Length: 451
Image (cartoon, rainbow, N blue to C red; front, side, top):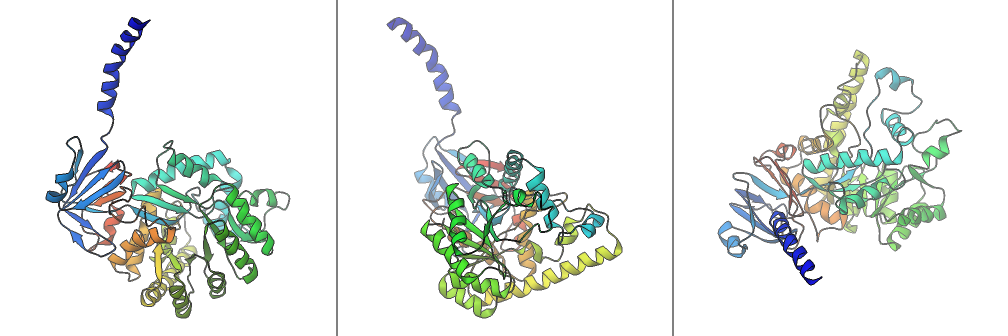
C-alpha cells in the first residue's frame, strides 16, 4: 500500500508543480507615466502601484516602490498612460435595457413616454432567470468600460440584482462590485398605470413594493431586507407623506441600510430631506436652500446627468423612423434637459453640497455597449459646466463615500481594493478620455488591457 501511495504521489507532483506555475502571482507591480489622485487633484509622474492579494500595498515613484517588489511579482507596464481609480456608477439599472418603440407605438400607448413600455416588456416578457442573464451581460459591459463598482437602484425584479451580485462575488460571472437594492418601493398607483386589471397586480408586484401608510413602509423595508439587499431605494413623488417617508427611513436605518430616494420635485426633495434620507437621486428642482440644508446634514445629491447633454432623446431614437414633428419634439426635450442640467450643476457647485454621479442607464443606445452608454455621463457633466476634476471625484472618492465604501474603493491608496483603470490621454484636460478606458483591473486581476 505504501509503495502504491508513493507512486501516486510521484505522478501528481509534476502536475501540481505545473499548476503552481500557471497560478497568477500574488504580487503585481503596475507602472504608468501618470497617476491622478482625485481626492487632492495631484498628479504623480511617473507612478507605480504595488498590489498584493488583490489589494493595494504601496503607491509612489517606481524607484521607491520597486524596492518592496517580490522577485516573483508580475509586471504591468502601461507606458505613457494615465492611471486612475476604478470608476463608480452610483445609479444603475443593470437588469433593464429599454428599447424605445417606434413613434406610432409611442403615440398610441396609454403609458406616458417611452420608458414604461420597455419596463413592462422586461417584467412581463422575460422570465426572472432570463433577466438575470441579461444583467450579467450588461454588468460585464460596464466592467469592460472601467466601472469596477456599481450601485443598482431598482428595476431588477424581486431579487435579480441580489442574485447577480452574489454570482459576481462568488466568481461565477464577471462584473463590477455591486450594491443591490432589490425591489423599488413606490406609492400605489405609480408606474405602468393603465394595465389590464386582470394582470396588473401580479405584474407590478414582481417589480415593486407598495407603500400605503407608515406600517406598510416598514414592511416593505423588511421584505427587501429578507433578500439581503445592500440599500433601500424608494421613488418619492408628491403623493408620499412625511410620516410614511420617516417610517421607511427609520426602519431602514434600524436594519443598517442606507436609503436612496428618487426625488425630482421641490416637495418630494423636501420630504426626503426632512426624513433624513442618505442620498437624493436626481434632485432636478432642488433649491439653493434645500442644497444648503443637505450640506449641513451631510446628505449626498446623486446627479444623473445622462439626460443633460442635449442629445439623449435623439440618441435613443437613432434607430427609429421619425416624423418631422416628432423629431422637433425630441430636439425640444433635449434642449430642456440641457438647460435644466446646466442650472442644477451650477447650483450644486455653488452650494458645496456633497455630490456623486450615476448614469441612470437602463436604456439601449444604438451602437453602444451598456458601459459605453453609461460613460456618456462624463461629457454630459462637462457640457453643463462641471470641471473635469469634480467629475472625476463624483465617480470615485465622492461616490465611494456615498456608498459607505470609502474604506474599500474610490482611490488608489494602500489597503483598498486594487481596482484601477487607465486611459491614453489626460482626463483633467479632456474628460471624454473616461469614455475610452483602455485598461481595467479589478481586485488585482487584469480584466482588459488595450495598452
